[in-house]
Image 1 (cartoon, rainbow, N blue to C red):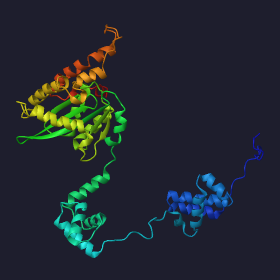
Image 2: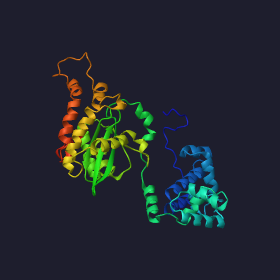
Image 3: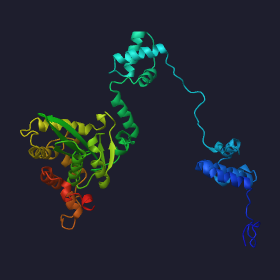
Image 4: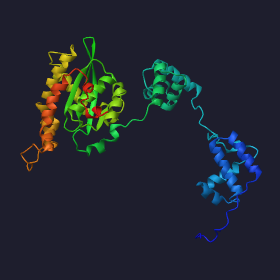
Length: 394
């Protein structure tokens, strides 16, 4: 038997009969109403026929608040089922055009004479020339209304591009969390230096590890995403896949093929803010260093890319294993990494044949320097022979 006393075990429940009028309204609603409006019509049908005008029961059955049900019951009109459709929520009284004709004429004249200035500077000039204070909002609205931009076509393109762009994860929102993580290779920074070398365009891709300041760089002929992808693969192999997060700016060279490579390799991308080089200070300083300490004194230059990469590789070996760094207490990046992340504990056995961890920790510096020489000067793209494990397993 049922636990509930009111249930009858031997007799089936009687079918619920809905008057023909409501069935007709339901059939008409299927042809003329949206799905959301049909759902509201079902609320009313249930309320009138099954719940017997019980608001609490109907609201509980459909999982809505009684206030919502009351609103649609009040709006319901049998002769006009469109009353169930959503209506405009635009306020009856909206903010109108608050700029007077005199102010508008003055702003247009001032803007045409100073197209290169922004609204804050125009606000100061307006007070000097016309003796009245005006808000930057009014200047912005008049500029937008009359399309008073230095290059209207370019401005419209930027507006459309900004509307289509996806939100990006910015590094300034994660700095406090990243500082708490003391793991080698967790965060790398990447950038591109554009140099015009006697009429020829040359690109130096640069990368730096956040904690140990180990750096890598390579010269390319242009800054396409295909070359940045090749640079990433070389860096992955060079660091034994020790890259979790890649921080870069918003350049087009770090989109397309570079984004797809990061997704394949499981690397999270985070970005700097627009026109904010202080979000990437260490690598910006390295970009200055590589131009002054290497390119300024290089006898090879950037005429021949292959020879330039050979010369750059020699300088990178010096930078990572010989040159003291003030930020690392005047240690080299490889010394700092070896002492803090790959140091062999004194209690470990001197025998290394059965200690792969010990071999890995001891040989990190050798591995890095050896592959920096072998694959830093290698012209064929490193992905062609599957040097990165993640690419080899695809």
